[in-house]
Length: 443
Image (cartoon, rainbow, N blue to C red; front, side, top):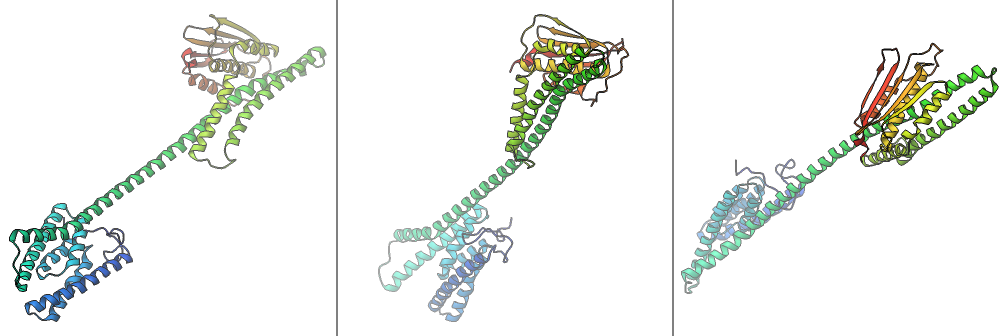
């Protein structure tokens, strides 16, 4: 590493060296160094002229040399070692006081290795002590006085050299350590800022995924809640049309049942739309949310939907669900195996929705077919099996189908760690089975 060309930080007048006016980062750094160099040049010129008078050299030459020596201080940021060496070289001529002080400070504050700083500071201190010792001795001889004792002269010279060398070196080392501390803190702050940005991006991504999952979940809820009721309403409407003229009393009962189903469907639809309305009121309509706000919206949706599940249908209502299908003209039998017991509101709601969607599919795709619902309470799980035979040849009910029913049932069961299977039977019917472990009910 080159020591004479080391980059030097500013001493408080400006920033670190870099792009700018040559090796000055800013104009004020150049102005500061130029001022120091001008003062040093005047000082060295005066001291050079004085030294020239003592040695018999031309005063003008001594002043010119001093002027050139003082202007070397302009190079302190670029070549601090050279400035200190010049100060040591001219110390026997008793010039360069400011040059030595500023040069030592700049050297200690620079990125020059410390061993070089210590070596040059020691050389400067030794030279200063030697010059002071000789000056004291010469002064006493010229004045005709008694020369001081040698130990006392050495002590006074050493203290003077220490006082002129140690303070600028220690101050420069302090400035160097402080600058490094500030740089490390700045780097740490930049690193933390980058980490925070990454965390914010990840939080935004998680919020987006959570919103997508909740949209899918709410769509599945609306499908399960509304599709069954509407399917039964369509079936009853078709039956009402067939018996309206032949049996007015039966038609009246069917119309009343149709109205009840419509009201139930509207009630459940209002509950689900209330969840969506709560989520939309939490954030600004149509405005992108920050990560924290998006997470809050998703949390509110999850809590609202979870509350709907907790207050949703239970296994005790399966008999009513089966009676609705029976009233619509389907032959459905409900069988229960094992001792009935609570399984947790969410598991019971999931089993209920599976049975509801399976019976809805029978209405859609197997008009006139008989169905059987088997609910089994086991030691560590609850299972349900829905089977239906082939259609009896009745005209199929024209109900729209989006193809999401089986997928929604599988997602519901899988979310509890259970198993789901569906497929045709050898007799030409269809079967749907689901098993959910009761451990999923523990929260």
